[in-house]
Length: 509
Image (cartoon, rainbow, N blue to C red):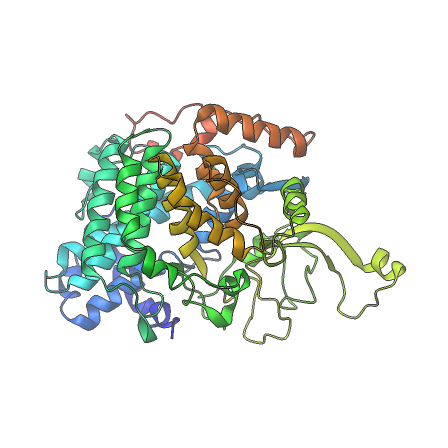
């Protein structure tokens, strides 16, 4: 089953690498005990599972998708607003109100986690014999994903593909983002050439070549936008994506709700972070941050684990977008957003019951397991639903975007219409424009951490105008900073710059 990739030998892998952890240095430092570890296929499999595990809970209370894709990405977009002031400082609020600094703990956590992935991928690749092609290819994919998120979120980074000692790491300088993209592309091409299209059975959830090619297509589309504005990249994206569309189409869910159904996982995605409930430290923490009440409240009692606790904040989905989706009866909305929740399980539906027990909210719910009888869920961060990093709709809309920009909008219409028709919407009456595609991406991936980076790659002027209008609408009186060019990147953590004293901080921090 899908849970194997995190359960099998997770603790053995993490403990085997514990000797190379260094709180001072975020870079991959060579593990002196690793020479004795990579000596069999069993140990190689353990090692790559350990790299995957860095995307999960990683021995902490929260997982990488919750920290990065929800709080640091979706939380800074125009999809999610901060409805009321918290009674305590919260990093999630600082991200949403553009108060992030180089000492924000969540920012430090994200940066360090990405370098953990690179460190362990480099360890494996340096020790694994060439004959272990599949494990090497998986490590390349995960290293590419980590570098991609680093350069998107933090800009120029040191680039290295080998284990590195503390003394050498301290001498490294930030390199142009093109250097990182060269490494990313090389890694993804190797992964695409050396993995099966998909894996099933006990290997379900592990990355395959189709996911590697889809991510490569996303990399090229990103390079085509701000800040690189590489006018050759859309052509490369079209080439790589055109070769996978038949395989991708076979995994396109006929019903949007199937994508977020725990009983249908690893059928309608390309690559997802795997989660399992049962109090094993393998559950998702996403539900704990889709908040709508104080930390002592129990939100969603009709759906959720009875001990569900909040983070003491009130975040809601953009009601203007919700109204647009309602006007056209967009089927994606019911899976993604709720209008509110009942505060008790037993209630009537009279006007007075509604007044007494129903809380109106525009809540992000696609990650909730909507079953309060699910006895396997033991805690607020023990939810079982996988987090999709790549799914067929990514390929559909990335391919359509590349086609439109390559003067082939007529060919793009098939892919945009397929997305719309599943949502219960009529096909477009004309060939799609980039605005059409950006709108479909916004609705399709609502809550999945993609919108913020879409705004960035559309350019500085569009980014600032969109977020300023959004902030002016929702965040007046909530101590929010004015969105600025600086918010197109996150700050390099102070802990890093204390070591690398020659590094310039990102603009505006």
